[in-house]
Every structure is written in C-alpha cells, then in structure tokens.
Length: 235
Image (cartoon, rainbow, N blue to C red; front, side, top):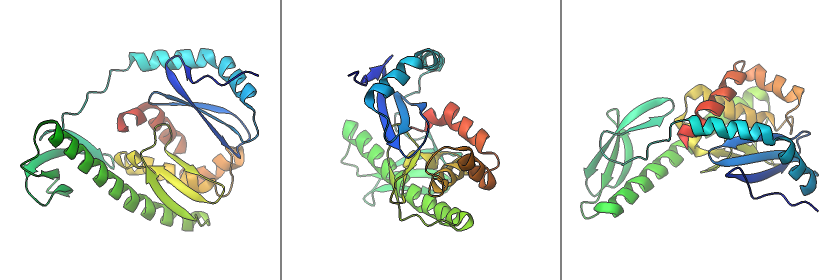
C-alpha cells in the first residue's frame, strides 16, 4: 500500500477529508493542503499527488520568485494590517498592559521591567490576543448577518491560528475561521464567511455550491484569487 508522503518539494502535506465530491490541491504558506472526499483512500491520495506533481513544481517555483516576508521587529512605527487598512504600532511602557486601537495607532503597552527578548515576545503575545479577540467579534457579526440572508443557522463559531486554510465547516454545523483573515479587507473576510456558510447547504464544491456563493458574493472569484495571491502576507 502506498503511503501519503509527509512532504512534497519542501511543502508539508495536510490531507483534509470532507463530504466534498472531488479532490483539490491548495498551497497556503509552506503547506500543501489536499482536500479529498471522506472515503478516498491513502493510496488514491498519493496517486493524486503524483499526478499533480507538475502543477506543484510550477507553484513552488512561483513561491520562490516571491520576495521573502520581512520579519517584524515589533517596534514603534511598524505597520500592521486590520480589515484592509494598515496601522502603525506604538509601543509604550505602562501597567495597563495589552494592545488597543487608539488614535489611529495599534498601541501596545508593556511593563517597563520587560526588556529585550521578553519584551518582543510579550508584544507579539498581546498583538495575537488582540487580533484573535477582534476576529471573533467581527466574524461573528458577519456570520450572523449572512446566515440570516442565506437562511442557515451554524451551531457555533470559533477562531484559531490555522496554518493552511481560512475556514472550515464540519458536519455538526460548527464554523472555524483562521483569525488572520481579519487582517484582510472586509470583502475578503465576507467571502470566507459566505463560503463556509454555504457549506451548510452544500457540503461540497459543486456547481450548486458556487452558484449559491455567487448569489451573496458576486465577486467571489476575485476574492478567492486575492487570497491565493496575497493571503500569504496575512499569516
């Protein structure tokens, strides 16, 4: 029996099985996500990876041509995205620690005793916490609004720092979103919400599914392409 490789051309392979009817490959960051029907065996998944190798080679070449993302130094003046706008970071000492959006800045307050590497780690921790909280708030609002329009009722909403997808919908109707999507413009976040809500009607990527997505996001193809091209910068 042929085993599914852990990596292909340096990309970590993640197999996602669901009620979909067809197989699809997506590259997100340094992960190769293989989305397949629930009952598709490992041997067939391995065969798909072999068949799609030329496509993977071309995509890896594209990634290598892209300029590497600059590591954030987490200092005042650096820019951070939120709902499609960039906000400058302002780091200050204080005892009411955390991050807030104030006066057009992302204001990070750190205890004066925390310096060096510990200070950098704390700023990152506070930023991640702020993004996660805002994501749950805004994505919940968007989900409730579009759920009413589509006529569906998800059983729950949660956010997580996912490595290789922007959202998911399980068989119980639970929606899970990548909180990094809150950094993207409103229209992109809306597309992800609509996409997952439509899976409550069509648990696949059939023509009927995409037609339903198109009813509530007529520009979904552009938004999907935006994520393919620019999504890496959000992670």
